[in-house]
Image (cartoon, rainbow, N blue to C red; front, side, top):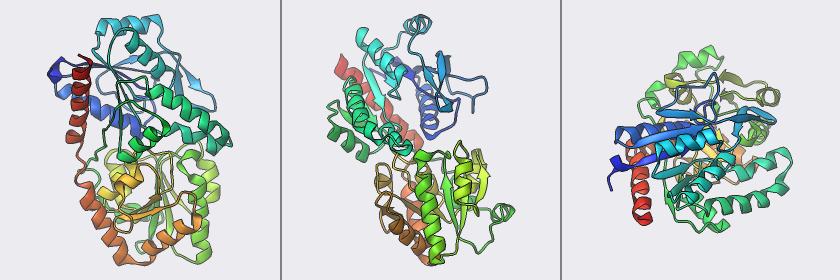
Length: 381
């Protein structure tokens, strides 16, 4: 079978209405698929004012706002109109990117119609409840997720750490790797801009510790704030540079009142913002890959991150940055202080990260997804 014979129905919980790392990866994948002659149709909730224009044909699935997080939507399943659209498109492969109602209905549709199905992992949903005082739900979610992924013909994860984790849960479906790439024209050391930093009140000789991402509790904002307080208590001079926005901004601003908040940055402005950091601090344990970690590395910015899925596949501890036990405030402060107080060590770690990031090229990485599709089709036949 050739790639041009593939007809892929892609189901996403959020393809373009709110910008995040998962849908950026999916849109880049669809662009690559279309360029290789693959027929693609995307099914997702939509909004009147999406964050960006979608790549490919996007079909709007009826949805409701997610309670408590109204920036996100949840599909109400597959109504008859959507099932008719799927039948008219006649996919020979179904790709599901999130384990919510739409994903469950999509894999059920695939099973009923004898269509092979692939699932991709983008977010560690089982970790979310603990940030809202509901950690007791985590074992239940893991059982549900294991059951969900065992309904597919193939599961793809961004790295080996995620593959090993879901296999330990009990996922017996074949697992392969679909990594992530980085735009090396955008995320590069030369994008650093001291004038831009000065406009935010950051002096040239101040070491900027950066946060990059949506300002939501599950990104580890509590740990970030506690570590900043620990650095201040130790007398480690620094500035905090926050790139992003979200519902927890007010809460976070109270915890780090001296931080420079640059808000959402897009396109080349985002590349400039990342390169203008001196250290990226990423305490999140919800990442399956960590796009922000790779973007910082490409810009020669060393990273201090939680020793968790995603980061362990990217960071070489003590070489390109530091991996720290999750929620260990003192250890985080130790690692960041080393980089803040030693210019040579910081530059060396940044250069090592830049060299490692060079291997992550989107075209080659997205081609592995086509190879996976074709392998699944071959097994199905």
